[in-house]
Length: 126
Image 1 (cartoon, rainbow, N blue to C red):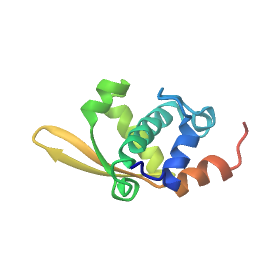
Image 2 (cartoon, rainbow, N blue to C red):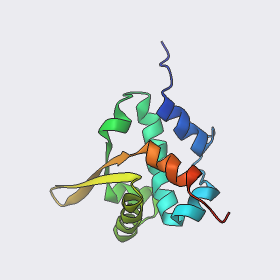
Image 3 (cartoon, rainbow, N blue to C red):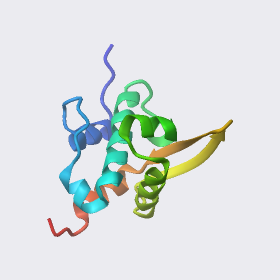
């Protein structure tokens, strides 16, 4: 039985497009910056996949190791922290930093309302 898509999942797909490529939204790059958009798009893509398994994922958040993001996206730990900081200041991203042995991992939560507010209602010089 196929699960019904949630409103959050529909919004994620509308932002990212329907292809399974990691596409960057040009409006997001202009408003948030390239690294911020790259990190946020990567997280949205992962959330979109896992929300089909557990639709509470947007509320509960997801865990990612910094090293995995660096390996997959080429964003250094420093660049990730800098991008996270800007997205947290905008209220889009909530990050809880955790440690496991020598590895750092983060619990990420995305506030979809703040994302929409920042992306679609903030005045832009686009």
